[in-house]
Length: 329
Ligand code: LMR
Image 1 (cartoon, protein in one colour):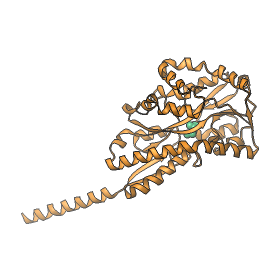
Image 2 (image 1 turned 60 degrees about the vertical axis):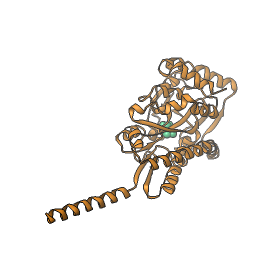
Image 3 (image 1 turned 120 degrees about the vertical axis):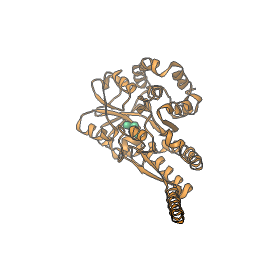
C-alpha cells in the first residue's frame, strides 16, 4: 500500500515538475516575410519582436525571418494555416483565394493617395475585411502600409501604348493581370524572390512596386526606367492563425494586441519616409531614370486601366468599391 502511494506521489511530483517546466517555456512566434529589413514591413516585424520581448519577458520569443528566408510568398499562407509560422503580412494582392473582396485594394487608380487608402482601411468596411477570413482560420490584426506602386521597365513608359507587348511581373492577383492586359501588356505571375532575376534575365521586362521594394531588391539596377505612376497601392494585412491567436493565454494576447496597435501606427507613420528615402537612393545610384508623367499622360493610364473595375465588380461587390472610392473625398 505504502509502496503504491510513494510511487504515485513520485509520479505526481514529476508530472508537476514537467508541467512547471512546460509552463516556463516561452511561446515561440515565428514572423516570416519576403522583403528586406529596411522596408516598412521589415521594420515593423523587428519592432514587434522588440516590444513583445521587452514587455512579455520570458513568456514570448519572436523569431523574424526576412527575405523569404523561411517561406516565400507562395508558401507563407499555407505555413500559417499549418502552424509553421504564426505571423505573416502578405500584400493585399495575395488574398484572392481566401476572399474575393480584398481584391478591391488592387483596383488601379482607386485611391488618390495613401491617406485615402488609410481612411478606407479604418472605415467599418475596411475593418470588417480583417475578420472576413476567420472561417478559414485567418485573423487580420491590422493594415500595414508600404506605398503607392511605380511602373518600371527596360524602356520609357510615358503612355499606355509604351507598355504594349511587354512582359510584366505581377503578384498572384487576377486584378493585376487584367490591369496589364488592359494596356495590352503580358502579365506574368512570379514570386517576389524571383523578380530581380526575372528582370535581369529578361524573363520579364517590367514590374510594379513601391520605391522601398524597388530599391531594396536592387530592381533599379536591372530596370532602366521607373515611371512615377502611383497607379495603385501595395499594402499589407498582418495576419495570424485564428486558432493559435485565440488559444494564447489571455494576458499574453491582450499585451500582444496592444503592441500590434502601437507597431501598426509606427509602420504607417514611417512608410512614406522609407519610400522617399529609397527614391532618393535610386536617384543617387543613377542606374535608372525616373519619369514624371504630365497630368494628361497620367489620365491616359487611368482611362486605359479603369475598365478593370467593372470586370471585378461582381466578385468584389459594387458597394465595397463605392465605399473605397468614397474615402477619396
Ligand atoms: C510583391 O510581391 O511584389 C510584394 O507583395 C512584396 C512585399 O511583400 O512587399
